[in-house]
Image (cartoon, rainbow, N blue to C red; front, side, top):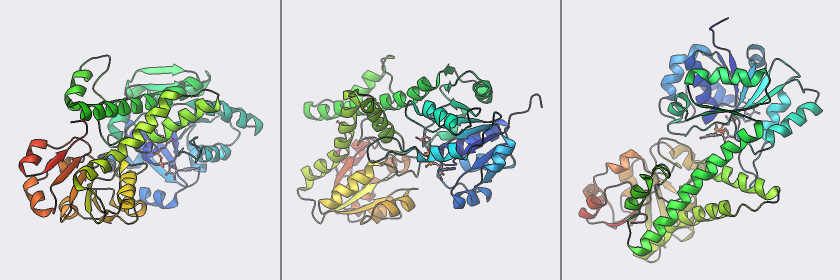
Length: 428
Ligand SMILES: NC(=O)c1ccc[n+]([C@@H]2O[C@H](COP(=O)([O-])OP(=O)(O)OC[C@H]3O[C@@H](n4cnc5c(N)ncnc54)[C@H](O)[C@@H]3O)[C@@H](O)[C@H]2O)c1
């Protein structure tokens, strides 16, 4: 079999698992995918992608002969040694990570020195050690364990899989760590090979740092508003400093999504559970929560009461190029506006189905212009490309009011002003 790529298994075919599976299939690995969601597996078997992620459908079609889908772990165990685990690890009510899906996967593993669990899911530091203790108690100590956290971004997930900034492998020095290094080798990324706890911490610290950068620039934006500076100029000037860098210096109405909120909270809780008060992260979280609500104050500043006002939200997904609505800022914003008596009408190019389930009382429109028709004010919540290209004269003719809150600083404010609008950005 020299030269052939090793078959692998991927357990959990969500945003991370599916991209990882398709990515490795593209590299020539046979990939055995497992998910407990039978409907998802059926759709995947039919060649259908259950999520919105650019390029994924084409990539699935191109490598479909190497992808095998099942709700059972048996075929995966039969064909592959590395079991890449990509199940969800959402937050519990206490803010800790909910590891029940990970635990279910561990329980389903046999006592085998031929297999390894490779943790792609984001888990708190110490999880690998705890799993290894569980395996010993269950008489499965020969099963190997590797931490290989995932750093891809939704919206550019396949690109990130193909060109990762780095691959992190945390292991105990047995065959499985080497096998994971070999698996990722064709991607040519810098490798950080370390112990399991450090690998787990790299993932949590990286997300916490990015979230900190966002909350930092959001606070700078808020101070800019009070002092007459323009945060876009400030971010440009800061970002050109190579020690700072321009990534994640875009002010807005707060971060959301399936990762930052829960991972920042999980790290804060992890520190707290170990007796350390992570003061900085407490502020990062609070700043983010307040940032989502600043839009409401901006609307009130111009409209007075929001009772009976028709407010159009443009974009609902937590960021562009995804249908993921988990912890999206739009959810908090819509609920706040609703509570203040506004009528909320919203449009998103791809997240409408998810939004319909999560946003009771919000009227969903089929296009941006439909959402904007007769609105007293518009708010750009997610910076979808199509909003940048709106014809503001047409929008002005359709709307009742002339107020635009650009929650992502993404449209040409001069063009908006020329169409007769009052423009409110963030930090400008
Ligand atoms: N989404 C991202 O951008 C991203 C990026 C990096 C890391 N992560 C981490 O990766 C993990 C997965 O995230 P996601 O966004 O892909 O989640 P997801 O919710 O999209 O997918 C998880 C999948 O696991 C399946 N599943 C649950 N229990 C299972 C079990 N016992 N056996 C088999 N399948 C099971 C679910 O049905 C679902 O399809 C999380 O820990 C997340 O923090 C996510």
